Image 1: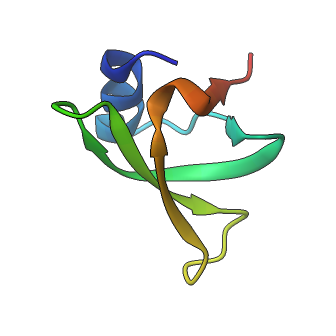
Image 2: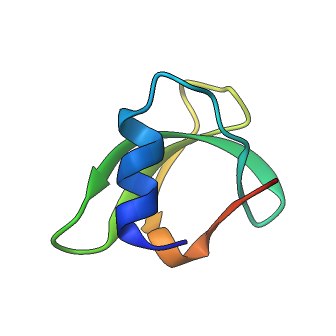
Length: 60
């Protein structure tokens, strides 16, 4: 995924299906400067990770 798209999803009021290595994630923040995103993994607020946005995949 590109940084611009991750930012669009993060700012949208709509819900998008995004995955990290096959696991569903919720984008909590996007660092455009560094191309990184903080995500919540599998709806668990205690399970977060900061990853490169190019590791995220949007499902159709």
